[in-house]
Length: 454
Image (cartoon, rainbow, N blue to C red; front, side, top):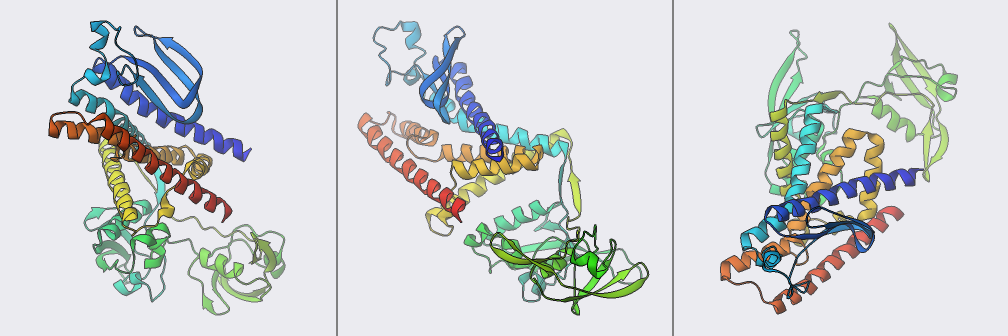
């Protein structure tokens, strides 16, 4: 059932992106007066088709589900010697270079427009996200040495306002790539008599983080992580906790005389202590207590862990960020632009070896993410589709022959030289482009297999 769910989520996502991309080519081709012969979802042999419209365009489903294409009237692919002068005017290569550029660029542009609309819709709907409130950090981390102690809420980074944890991660990721320091504006809890909040700024050095660290949880390496609720017990089930006398509502202050900063710290300590007696000191109502409990020993994915069978709330404080329509569209456009720029930066750093090629993913990983986000909810799934749409748009604009970007490169050379590229040059470039694509596909497939196995 999980496999079916994943495949269905992947098919819907991929089908949507392919149709939108090819519709971009189709609509602009029709707008420019070019005759469209076939619109295909999928590649290879056609398994189903119907013809519609004045031109009797064939709308088809093809056997290979990865991709699609729009087939136009093109003298390089069809014999046009017997065609009427009226039809020849609608042949692709007879169009001006600017029209050809518009038709080719329309596919990636459609993907970017889809991403903007999806993000805008999500921003208007409101996206529940963790508040960027910090968990206490270790003393040796960059965050602690910069002056952070935990409990602060980040409100801006280098003057850019942030409301959610994902925005903090995004801004800091860009500063790591650009090798620039980050100034964090924070709100601190005033522990004085007057109470309230204090505004402060700290300079967080990022030189300890390399581009390769972005592949993992680089925020944790800096000492930044989300604040969690106090270690207050929820439902107590039949097991070590109940047998020891622990009750729902107990607030755990320390274990074996080591202070417990939050619920996550308690869970981590219990998991790391299978079969080891733990002395829990806490508060129940108005009185303190000390109880000894020994976690059960069990195996979890080949790892031995401890468990006392009690629920501990771990969800961070959340905020729902929503915007008015025009603001949402502007934010959607900005997020699409920033994500596109980030994707290009990552590709550039992969080329020069600063970022691992392990970041290249193939259909297996994409399908897995599609299934996971679909399970989480519609908001996560639509966000996933938006990000993949941006990736598809950026990848298609790369100046690799066979891709849209390769054709745009040809037309740019035609504008500069005043004549189209030679057929011989085009053939050589096509072969080179196919070689590059095959290499990328092999790398992506290898990375997908490695992720599945390990």
